[in-house]
Length: 275
Image (cartoon, rainbow, N blue to C red; front, side, top):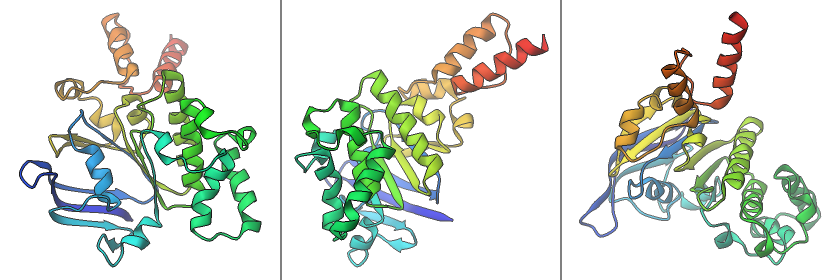
């Protein structure tokens, strides 16, 4: 079932230069979709349009079968959680526990239920021992885990990650990507990630490639990412697994097309076993 549908969407910040040009897409319920594109391609603008932070000049946005309009905006926002690029912009509380509790208080969750919810989602993101810590003193990856816990505690149906790993070091990025994949496996959520990280794209269900405000490629990651030359022309990267595989091909080692290192290792092991 379609959870999100955009039809013929147009948007401009200055009413003259279009940023989003006739974009139509649909996202199925329970899927993990990545939206990629170089800087200025319009991907973060798409996220802001989906939650009503920006208003399209024309076209329609349907969220969970509700039109995104003044009559339904509050209902729709209750169904969507968003994790931003800089977690510091989302912190409200003096401690991690206070920060996770903030959204619950706004939704008038009874105080006797709140502590259990806080502990449940702090545990899910591996931040239980930091509940009494100040969020500003955490590492970048830890801050992003707290931001994710705060969103999960609200029990949204849809989560949008807007460049959620772009400010992290490689280790922090890998940990948050692993957490996103774990949430996708365990929670019945529709997840959208606006990202530059091609390794994250390789683990998603569906990928949408934007260029100059338009969709230029779309499909399963294993189909889209194999168009490596096209991605490079769009100033995008290709997965390390594919780079490694190409080097193996040069050495005469023929593998099936692989976009994740896990799959490459599996293929190499099978090939060695056959030989």
